[in-house]
Image (cartoon, rainbow, N blue to C red; front, side, top):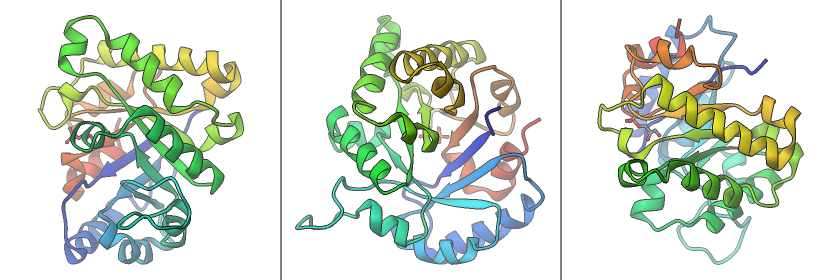
Length: 250
Ligand SMILES: O=C[C@H](O)COP(=O)(O)O
């Protein structure tokens, strides 16, 4: 039985004060939720404050990025061990915004996932196709490449802490959600890829979550799909009422 995993990616939003206001409202509205894993990913500068505010709550902390080395001459970067020290349980890797805007490659993303696994941290590993790739029937090839390259040489034991986030790029921040069937087809395909890489029992345990314009009014239908185990929420995670409703999907 896979525990639903609902994560809010705050992206480049919220000062420390705004982050704390959001987290206090969220803590109150989801305090009785025990059957879902709830995660928020603030900006780096708010991690320590939000971590303190989350102590004793049912919400976990994620960072939005990391560098695949623990120490060294890497100006401006942050390592998995420092993120763990700041209170993070997870790190988002491979988000399409970083792939597209910052040129992150599959091997670089793979190095981050292996570094996180080595530190015992979880990864929220994002994959997904562009609109052009979907319209030219390349979706499955793209997912195959991203999954096999991103998870190369990742130990099977680490998969218990890795959540795969399927985010069709054309659905991110556009208000255009993948249909329930489109999302379920992609998720079932990804689970099959995981089975090929790690075996059936691992594939059945890994949470595969959907991201791309998830809102209170479409979450119930998405979460009703067999292979959709949660959501990675951008815009709607910035409003406590909306994110709380998404967490408490029907
Ligand atoms: O990480 C979250 C995704 O990019 C989805 O963002 P969105 O909910 O604003 O479409």
